[in-house]
Length: 150
Image 1: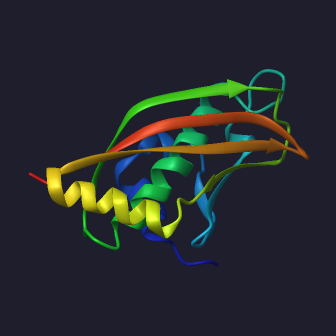
Image 2: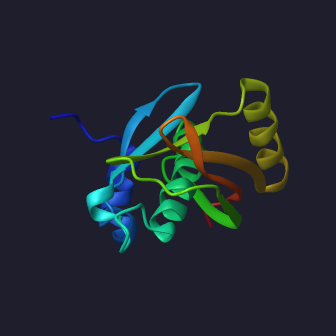
């Protein structure tokens, strides 16, 4: 059994709708975050991944990327989603739905946190994708805001 990451614990404790989808961290490193969820908990009447579940998993991959980076600076980062858009390209019928968010580079993170230190809030646009085999099933783009912890 793998140990829970801080993001897995946050989802379990604070996000019941995401937790009920079975979303867990599959991999996390300096290049990307991959979240996974079983299609068995996220399917529609055609046995494909439900569009709402795809949206939640894709959004959480981006939100989670920011969460992991912010946890290096703050114990309880106050992150909100300002905007989120998804483009569905094709059905996803994979047994495990995976959302991948590529991490910003070190320079981008430095600018993000410098702006936060100066103003008490800052935002970042992140993207994720859900694959169906070798094809993109959905592409998500969201704007996420780090707010002061008042």
